[in-house]
Image (cartoon, rainbow, N blue to C red):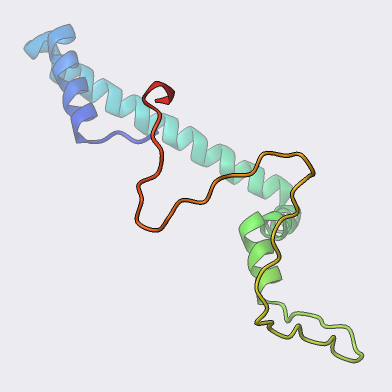
Amino acid sequence: MDLGLPEMVLLAVAALFIFGPNRLPKVAAEAARMLRALREVAASARAELSEAVGPELGDLAGLRADLDPRAALARVMAAEPTVPPGPTPPQAQPTTAAPLARPVAPGAPTAAVLPAGSPPPFDDEAT
């Protein structure tokens, strides 16, 4: 959760209205003490956990790095491409022939070709 400057100013103004200018310094000091105590509890719990788990915790960190999708993608992208041994397939030669016209079904209506420079038809009701 990120708190930017506008959010912090809004919280400070709200706290000023809720607690008033006389009680606000006392409430802020108490909140700072509670935050410090919470950080100490979290640090001691982390220290106890790392002491209890010991070397297994290091193995989990390595496993986490192995399962990281960004690291896996980097490993795959860095690997040399594997080409099976054998003769190389022939390359397609460019052709200069005109593209084939699409066959028209018998009895199908055909589109009229406009003379060069004439405007295309426009239907006012279609738009």
